[in-house]
Length: 283
Image (tube, rainbow, N blue to C red; front, side):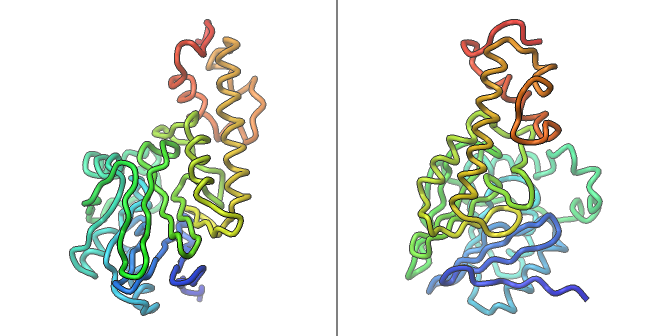
């Protein structure tokens, strides 16, 4: 039998559980007043597993939830947590909250073909309840947790969670370890590197970084991904500035990643560039 997931303390009163499905990380931050859970997984069924793991940890009651962005695999477990632990505030950026309400998180074109689509669609949805624009602090009694919207990147509504006294950053999908960061149809590839610059400014050499997916990483790892995303952004600017058509951009660019991963990035980059940075013809 496979080992059961469990929450591991990665810094004082900060626990992370890694789940094989989607390589999702769920984080708990504890204070004298209780626990904050960051992300809740991608289905009702999987969230019950997470709730059981929280009970086994026995570190205190949940007092709040945080959703790092509006993609389904990070908030479809909200209803289970609220049903299990009571009517808790659920925090997200204003943009993410609005998207959860408007789309139900199922705007991904790939979701219909997901091998667990039936399980995902059977989930009762509970969007975030408390939005913020740039930053907000959550009071846990003897410590504070900071929610920061550093800018647009993976989505328009990403947030990172900073636990200052423990030197921990929970990065959501602005950084990933299990694969390259996913640049989808709702991403902002030209802005993402600058957004990560702000996140890097919150770190020290000793910061423990919890990515949205995969193993724990550090500042150097985040810097490496920022560099690669920066190369992608600058390559798009260079190609468009030389008038290379979008249809030939993937072929002509020198990319740090497999070009197959960059179809959306290049298309969106061409769309997002101001007219002054483009040279005709581009089609």
